[in-house]
Length: 64
Length: 246
View 1 (cartoon, rainbow over the protein chains, first blue to last red):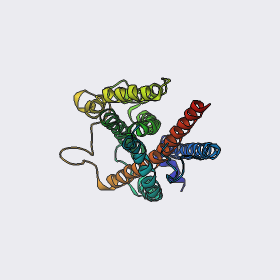
View 2: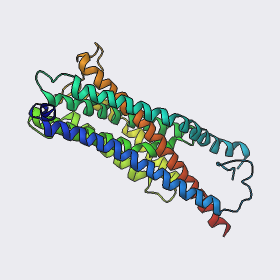
View 3: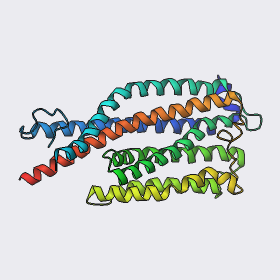
View 4: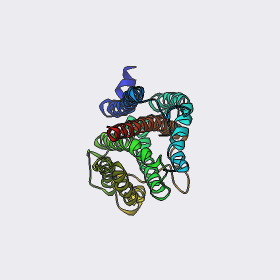
């Protein structure tokens, strides 16, 4: 295990590379998901406050 | 606006959202599986290189990131061309959603390249043709991100960004062939060669799995970001309509 973590003496280089990769993949995914959630909440609030005419029939993607 | 035109304007994004929702769980599942097995092969199973020792494992992050940086940019340029010619409503949405992700892959490629270069070449950075052209790619991404938001009228920003993407695509073959055209510190291609890959299958497998895993991850994140961008456009449209009524 120690040998594995040591990466033949190159631990700082190898693990920083994988760490940066993981940071990017996870960070970008989470910020993108959070962005989608807030936009969706904003949209739902706006559409709920909107006058209801012209929205009958076309669900969601209204034809206005 | 005629019914046909408004149908064209909204039908595609609606269908996209449906297909996207259908694909997302599969893409997330495939990403977890591919990266899980890929990491295990990359870190545990694959052998250290006879010259580079364990630093060769940096390749399994660095090379897929580099491929993705080129793939994402090229796909954005193609989508920009489609957007300019056929006015496809999703084209500019895609380019805007993908740009920060492509910039991230490029930054990851540059950073892991430095972390690999220091122990193996004795330098974090060298202004050779490969590294310089990838740095230019990074700035093209940043330029596009800044440009699309620099106009009051979003449509004009999208058009300016599309032109930047199409002009900048000239950099893609320069990056690919930089290692053949110039004497670079960076090594030449060892996977996508006319005479086949020159690396052993014990290294090719983890590399391939990580690359496909990066691609499915990118597809999932791109769908999520496009959905957010579409919601934002609806919000903007509703607010403009409200101002119009007041």
